[in-house]
Image (cartoon, rainbow, N blue to C red; front, side, top):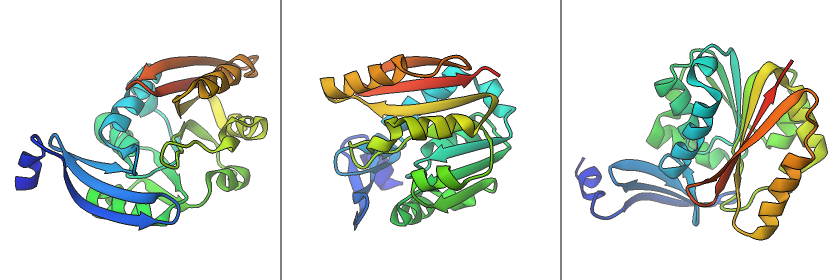
Length: 221
């Protein structure tokens, strides 16, 4: 409690470790909030939770509360899962896919992720999981970063088509992206402009917390 109070004055780091996949994992009290960070980016809670909350509000809390199965690609500390459960009161099944088992251990210890009964965590590469899963989902949240870098496969046609195939009718994809330079800005513009729109509606929510852009995809039928 003392560390939480003092964190309004100065951030207080309470845990730090090295991970082969995430490199640096840090847990910090800042402004009364417990945050999970990499060396250069917020991984969970703090700004990331605010960013994804905006996307979920754009889809509609009531719609999400009525869904049956949500897939989260890129769990980290699980802040978006906490938003789904604590704020939206989502009662359905959540499958969370995270490649880094070390980060899940931290999430369980400091953020009680393992206390969420409807959450099933799968330790696997998101691309491999998407190839193999036979389930269909009402909402797919894509939030995959290695520090400030996004894997190229997220923007490749095969992955996009597979994600859309896994979506149920009237379902949504919420894709969190980061734009740090003009090349990444052009990448996002190309992604949106070339998206197969006959059965989908796509929109962007740009420049959230300066560098993030959310892409929201809705399956129409």
